[in-house]
Image (tube, rainbow, N blue to C red):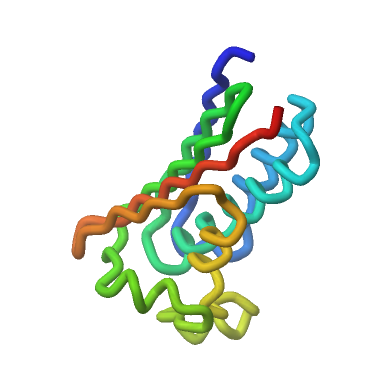
Length: 141
């Protein structure tokens, strides 16, 4: 399979449209005939990252690369950055505002779920500049 590259813009603060990019990616992965478990794991990682970009940053962009062996999802925002990555990785820790919580978001499971459902996860963050979360999901042969 030739490498397929997909790019999805994510609007910041738009909780109504949140999840649109992950839904589009999921449809594309289905059309490619990937295994259902791989699609599920990639969709969870993308959704959690997308929600983080909507809630905590002014949006961003998700880039997805798919080849025969793996899916790489790179989610980049220009938000405030993560002051303490170790703390942010703790289940239940959240800095989401009241509005997001009232709508059912901000449970503090985003980054832990991304780690749980990916084969590899890397977080690069700089205060005042933004965060990039890159995940790798292997496609079994």
